[in-house]
Length: 324
Ligand code: NAP
Ligand code: F7E
Image (cartoon, rainbow, N blue to C red; front, side):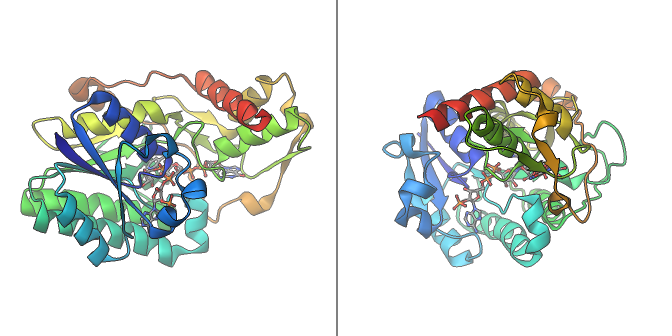
């Protein structure tokens, strides 16, 4: 059995990845979770509730090197997927210090502990399309220069560089997955896609009257999280470690997402959506679109769920969840 450690196992991607690896078989799965999560499983472990008897959880916090070190020493993983982060871009403007601390020092703590206690472990870092920020070319690929526009984006550039440096300096098998936005029925409620599908479902069921949003013109390359965790795994199965863009190569505005989500329940979005400046960001990433041809060629990966299918999946799931 291969031992795998997933940081951020309670998050959207961590839950899909744990499921994916359990289905693959041959993996003993360990997750690093915050102590508060173990103390309040009902609220904090909802995405992995159905997996709890098949995985082992260890208390630790990214900010504490000692706790990360102890977990890595105990688990001695063969593969480590470092997904834990303060991942909400908007919040990173409100609390840049904690975002930088968790995301940069946290990544350094994991890398350093692996180097010391499990140097043969293959390491995956959850890098992000937010690193491209004010984009220098369209579409963005592995060679596109970075120009982050938020403390979150800056923290991911640092994590990317740390991951590459541990590869070059210490020979660690460390990969950066430059993932573009990916969503699912397990997406956090503050992200725009889930905020939209949740509110659309509530409006349809008469529980809400309006949907307040910020910048409708921003464009993103949105894929399905279930597809993207396979790409993470594929990166660690290669002979050589490398960095890959994972995306759909399609871009859509927030407005298009809103329109299609309301269409799913036969309502006209213009009757319900209002703009609230409070949801605008001090610096916006206007347009993202990823070129995943390297991943297609080397990993044999491609996205399966389309933009429309993703929106329908999320609206249907929210309707079902609220009804029950
Ligand atoms: P998510 O749902 O927000 O999950 C984040 C995870 O990190 C949660 O398990 C959270 O634990 C954990 N975490 C946060 N702070 C921590 C700390 N101080 N110590 C230990 N654990 C901590 O994010 P996601 O969408 O699954 O994304 C996974 C990773 O990919 C993140 O690094 C994100 O930045 C990156 N990424 C995401 C996307 C996307 O579109 N989803 C795109 C590119 C990159 P709690 O449950 O206890 O809060
Ligand atoms: O915003 C606009 C907002 O918060 C998308 C994270 O997973 O993907 C995610 O970051 C767009 C932005 O995601 C609202 O201004 C309009 O342009 O859903 P989001 P994000 O910032 O793209 C990247 C790849 C990551 O790595 C991150 O971890 O939607 N927008 N109105 C709004 N956004 C929110 N949240 N709420 C609004 O009301």
